[in-house]
Every structure is written in C-alpha cells, then in structure tokens.
Amino acid sequence: MIMIHRVFRREAALLLQFVGVAGEGDVARSRQVADAVREYIGALHHHHTTEDELIWPLLHARAQVYDDLVVRMEQQHEALDGTLTDIQTHLPRWEATAEEQDRAALADALVVHLRILHQHLADEESLVMPLVEDFLTPPEWEQVGKQGLENVPKSKIFLALGAILEDATPAERAEFLKKVPAPGRLLWRLVGRRQYRRQMATLRGGVA
Image 1 (cartoon, rainbow, N blue to C red):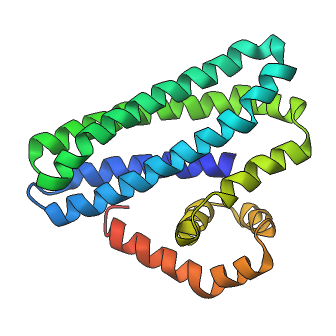
Image 2 (cartoon, one colour):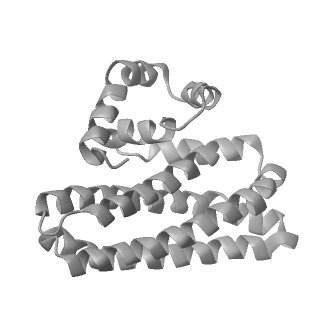
C-alpha cells in the first residue's frame, strides 16, 4: 500500500507542476499533460474501487468498534471523487486552448485535490492499515494487490509497473517483482523498463 500511495503523491504533485509551468497557447503540451492527467484519474479511481469492494466491507463487518474510521475513509473517497470531477470539468477547456485562465482554473483544482489526497493517504496509512493487518487475512490482503494488477489494461502494464518501482527501495522492488509472473519480469527487464523511461522523459522533460 505504501508503494502505491507513493505513486499517487508523486504523480499528483508532478501534474500540478506540469500545468503550472505550461506555456500559454502551447496546445501540444496541454494535450500531452491532459493525457497524463486522465491516466492518473483512471488509476486513482481503480485503486479506490478496489478498496471500496475488498477492504471497507470486511472492516465494517469485523472491526465495528472502529467503524467511524472506515466511514471517514469512504467520505474521503467521495471528497476526492469531487475534486476529480472538478479537474475533469476544467481539463478539456485547457487541453483545447492552453489559455492562461483555463490553466489557472485547472491548477487551482489540482491544488485542492492534492491537499485532500495527502490527508486521505496519511489517514489511511496511520489509522486504517493497522486495522487491515488485524482484521484481514493474508489471502484477503493478497487479493487486494492481485486485483489491482489484474485489472490494469495490458497496454498500460509497463506504465503501471514502472510508476510503482520508480521510487521503490531495492528491497521493495525485489519483493514486488516476486508477485509478477516470470514472463512478465523478463519482459519488464528486456522491454518495459526502457519503455517506461522513454515515456517519462517525453512527459517530464526538465520538470521532474
């Protein structure tokens, strides 16, 4: 969970940077960044859907004394969904025009999103993960991670894997790759790693 949260913290902050420094009228760049914003939104929706389906119901049933914490997580998911809706409202306009007023409105929406995201991830890590350790079985927790990977489209798997491994420690990287089937690990080393680096170099340039 910590590795996944690290991805969302990093990517949300980078997207805000990209929007913040984008040149007025540079539609090619606004389109490129808008695509990255949509990738981020899709990944966060998928992550939260997995939690909504596999974690919160079990904690509601088994950790009723801590139900207020689980409700807080669900409410934070709703708040984050609201911020993503705001981002998606402003995104097409800026993508099409790259005008300053549209850029500023999108940046403001990303600032609000980042603030709520940081609070949610911190609460989840400090307050809820101990409950997961106490009330979910190892197979149930493994299913959370498995569903997270299985539902990633094949065309996006290297992007997802690279994002997770980018800031991982050597120990985290080795442990995570154990969960990837052997053919997938081989493809990652032969093709995926370079593909991910090229994609990030194209998107980030000198910003990251």
